[in-house]
Length: 72
Image 1 (cartoon, rainbow, N blue to C red):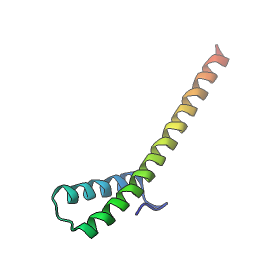
Image 2: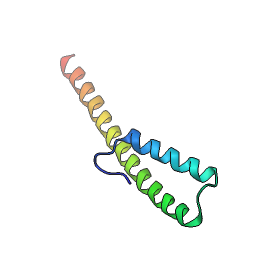
Image 3: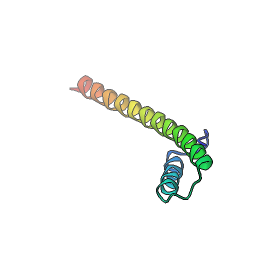
Image 4: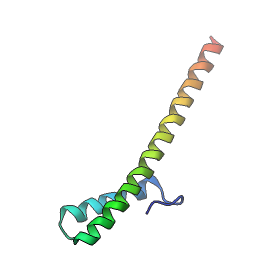
């Protein structure tokens, strides 16, 4: 499960492990349901991290552009 201490990289590695388990058919139906729920939580966590990083990058780029305009 994704926690506040878990990094994006760790979450992605866990997702990759879940996908590998599903693709290898090594899960019974109960385990499959649990892994899919975990995968959904991890995907949500990763998506939120990506959106946050994207917003921060856009903000920095906009601030950089504003700084360049004021020095010209």
